[in-house]
Image: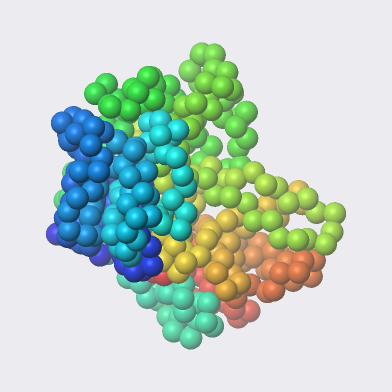
Length: 421
């Protein structure tokens, strides 16, 4: 069974407007399955023999009917250069599709950026809309045009139990399609396999100690959805594991984790505020999928429900995952805002044409929702009064549970299981 992915429209557009499309993302997020929809011939670099042959004769790998799909191209990095040279000689739109779940082992083997010929596309795990676990009755596109179709929905059949399960299971297609009783166990297997590098052809990963990678992941998970400084995370690794770790070693391991597309920090928005307010530029710490953080700390759905504060931080990470997928489908971006006066906004969704919306993320409950509404109003007023930015097109409190409604002054309250792009 195949569930349609939002990234499909972007891949289709890039194939019509670029010589090669490079689809990157974490292992098992569905890159190959989706890209197989568009190929007319393919090769998978998933065996030692295939990799060795591709390294010895990369030009031969590119021979075949186009679009030609090369899966896990980074295992033979010179393929990148060969694709560029071929497009220089015979440029055609939609000639190649390259997929990769990590960056090349030796980045010096890639001799050019590919600009003008090769277009990158970032793929993430499945959002709730893609996994058919969001009703999709609230559209972000509609909110950007006045919310004319915004529903009133009590949404009584979606609970914190459901949210906790979905967060621990994650958006991995293999887990989404599995029966519920074994889905989280499948995600556990996925997590455990992330750090098995003994037979990895990439020496840079093979030299990494799995226990150190897991230490860093655990520390990141303990600081999920916060603006923890790198120095704080390093100190946490040292304290919780009783070991030394210098900055250089940490940076080296962090680069490996980012090359595997496991971490995805949310960058800060920096509007031009005409005041003494200092806007913080530290990103908030996030994962490409919240299930990785849950597995790193051994957290179950029951554990989340017992600790509302942690549940809230993990839910924020979960919501940022879906917002990032939806923003990409709208050709937009997501950032966050925080200043030295303590004012913050969990997510700011920007579109290419300058429209934007401000989003506070809350578990739910009257008090938390009221806090979110108050914060959004303060944020909107500050932006309007003290910056050159135009007013936001919408304000929204994104919740884990509860109903969908609109306040008298126009703030939308939206549970995550009703949202779509």
